[in-house]
Image (cartoon, rainbow, N blue to C red; front, side, top):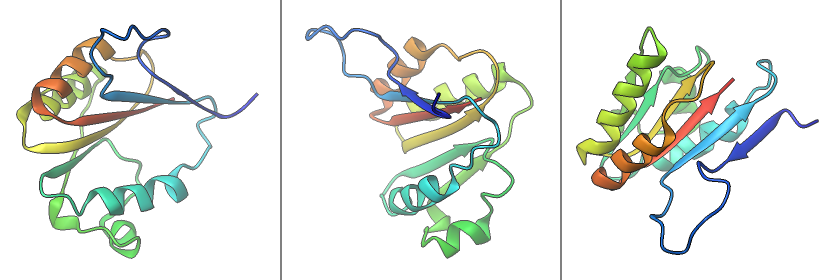
Length: 133
């Protein structure tokens, strides 16, 4: 069994439906390290005109690690929450605001309401990535 599983919010896609703007990455093993994959992606995303928001990033995704990966940290906003409800709320608000191009949120446990997050991302013309264990 693989340790990483990426899913779209809908198991089937209707050609008339709205394009999905939120991707979920499920980690079946909490010891899997995504940083070698995420740091270059974050570095690339940090060069966009709008904000890149990181919600509850792992402790090893530090400002120094981001800078070493080539990220423009002045375009990155890091938020930390204390609950899944707060994570979902901050994620939805950041996605809908129109000031962010991408929101990456790390959470554990139950999946946030992906349909609501997708609608928020559509309103704000943003993309969302949920990393969930």
